[in-house]
Amino acid sequence: MASYSQDLSIVTDGMQTSALAAEDPLVRAVFVSLFTWRRAAPDDQHDGERWGWWGDNVSQFTSDQIGSRLWLLARQKLTTQVINRARDYGIEALAWLVKDDVASRYDVTVERMGVDGLAILVRIYREDGSVRDLRFDNAWSLINV
Image (cartoon, rainbow, N blue to C red; front, top):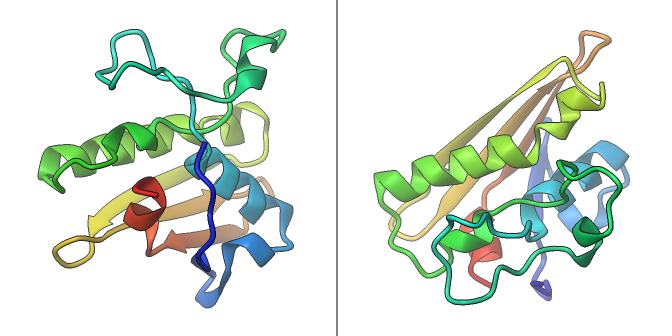
């Protein structure tokens, strides 16, 4: 599992802050969902280890997994295909938001930032009608730790 020694910035509703200092439980939950390593699927290409959070092995719900498979993109070139996979992995990692009634829906957008950067934007539509925007401008550096 990755360890984060750098300041992890996040833009939440237009305000930049440190992801590690975020006090909002929703922000922390989205951060954990995206940047904790989910176990690789049996058909994923990886370098021998399927990794993943150990707790997924003992969960009483087989479909209940923590994290994302973004780590599978580490050390790959930032191609359109990789950007599309990052978006798919983000959508997969945040599916629990709707399943657990935290949000009515959510959108994940992934965009290239220059030559070697990737940003992940998450828009969460809450049941009360409010909308929450989270932007991880340094997502590529978090994936490639």
